[in-house]
Image (cartoon, rainbow, N blue to C red; front, side, top):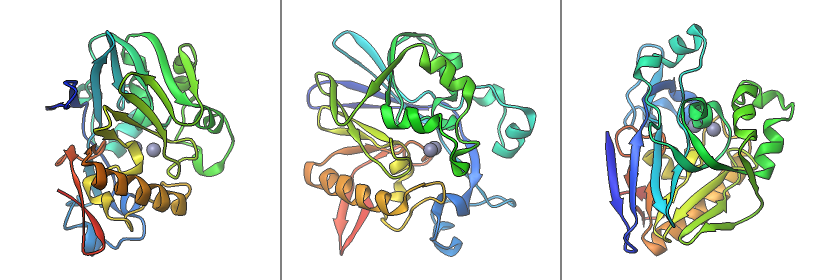
Length: 258
Ligand SMILES: [Zn+2]
Ligand SMILES: [Zn+2]
């Protein structure tokens, strides 16, 4: 399934779901109890909820850009079982890509690098690249050496906020990981990766147990969502299978996706 957004500056942005997989609902919603999150995401008998891998594709200055690479197809049998999917059900970015931007390097965001043709470069934040090579016990299992090896061949490290093309801005959005980045197109379409993985996560207390720095997520989310409301940004929700894009409103003291 794909959605196309056209910006006021006439950029055509395609949102593609490269495949659904299952994650533990409790982990996705952190301290929010199941009686709450179950209303937004139905759980299976193993408490798992369906997550999408929505990636974004567009052309700027003659270059094809893709943000995120999806799951990819390189997992052992046991992982497929846990994820509730199979290699046949995972799509890949089938046309060559000039530039790939990765919000961070967790396997569900960059595993697809093995299955795509990258002609030019891959943008990754320097902090993320360093942390992906670190030995933090909580990060073990989130990063895979084989992904980093492929990315390393085309790597361009990004420090701080940066304009990588006319109308393509990279914004540091720390919290899920220290080096997590988001992408803003034409000051209008925001791709926030695991900062706001689903439309339900615009609700500030929805902070994943996967988030390494929960208070930083809270602060970054508050800041980014305030801007989204003020500027009328369209937000892409990377893991939301039901609502891949939406706007954000602030009503009665809380953020909601509309
Ligand atoms: Zn992640
Ligand atoms: Zn993720």
